[in-house]
Length: 261
Image (tube, rainbow, N blue to C red; front, side, top):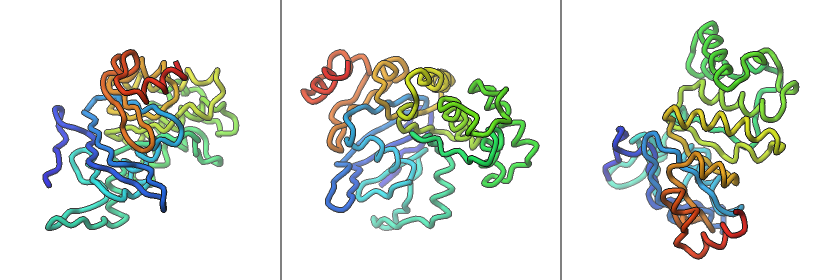
């Protein structure tokens, strides 16, 4: 099978028939999805519908049970020889994963490192970047997320919203071509949600290719140009956010939105 090449006109992420089993639990059921370069794809749906699992499969934090994941035109996690799939070595998987950045619900910052040290760590340890260059880049990224003046603070000295913005800067420090966000505001107090969403809006305006899982329907309407509704491990409906949110064609989508809008 010929993978789609990653160009401006072709997809950054392309999923073909993705299945994921956890024992007897069928978490993903034949998901097909294409995310174009520069597109902001937002996945919504009830808890347990497979949204976060899908993100983790794209980033190879979970191994798919069947199907194919192409990221930036390359088959992720496997090589295909004579029609048979062979799992890549862990080192090769790690190399592929560097091309995507992922931000989780929980910030997962190193508590013993300052904000700027957290952002520097990946480039220094993984990319062998000189510390002076890494520090300069990290300072610029903290400025981008509105935290330049807090570079020397430890995570315990930051609010939840500030910690999540450091986590976004840390992901950006690896210069990913695709960003994945797994409910990045779900662990925040309501008054802190806006500052994180503003950073994501800025990334969207810059042309970053992104996929987000969120319960923030208003934010999805504002930032997405591709909306996906998932239920029971399947993509039930997708398309232009205005169409899906205002004129959903699937009864399950209509039932879900009637409860959250």
